[in-house]
Length: 180
Image (cartoon, rainbow, N blue to C red; front, side):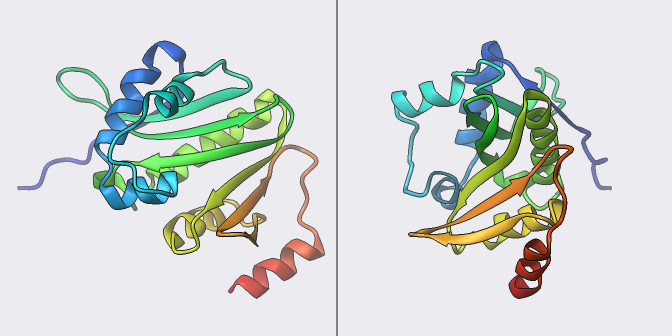
């Protein structure tokens, strides 16, 4: 008999719960997943990086968390974070614990983060993805068909337009055709 699927909830992460969520997600990532997320080996979170990740003000630095229910309380399984000036573009990063990858959690987090970003006033989401992280590149383009990708040094920069003024241009369509 298989266990019933667990319900995943996604909601805005607040400052008081950020430390627990960041620590739980980080420790549940494999070394390879940590490398893909932080672009370098990351056997542990340094105090400085952890401080940046948990510093949320809800506008310039905001995050969404995915959780599953457990007897001791909700367990964080993924985080999507943005950082920016409060308008224009925002930098984004997404991490989903290995046991929950390829189960729709990243899509839900990224979609929720885009909604939050639009609510705050951002117009684009920018992310730096390692070239061999094809799963993340696929997630971005499957979730946001108008996303654009370009080489930028050692990473692929993805740009996701959001907001009511966004429209698909001929350049977007051509970029999508060339990507296939």
